Image 1 (tube, rainbow, N blue to C red):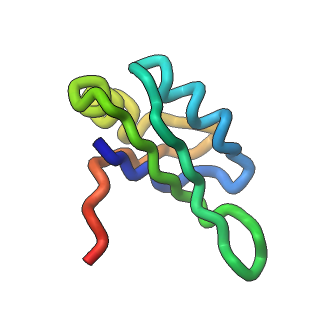
Image 2: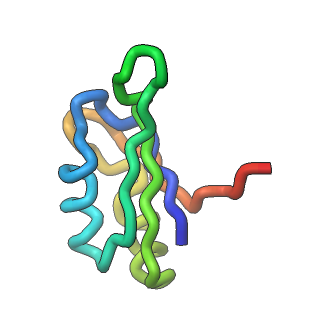
Length: 81
């Protein structure tokens, strides 16, 4: 399952986010989206997990949870059209 994680602090690194989510299960990939021009974080990321049950637990437990001073938005990512 692909998970959208938003409202991240611009200081959060991929490894930090991956560590938090790995507490729930194996993370296949973790990608913080970077602005092409400024080379800085856009404040959101996509995380892929093979285990849908673990991914659903991440969504239910981390949505609204505080991480680095900000309340995260965590939900299933919708495919781009």
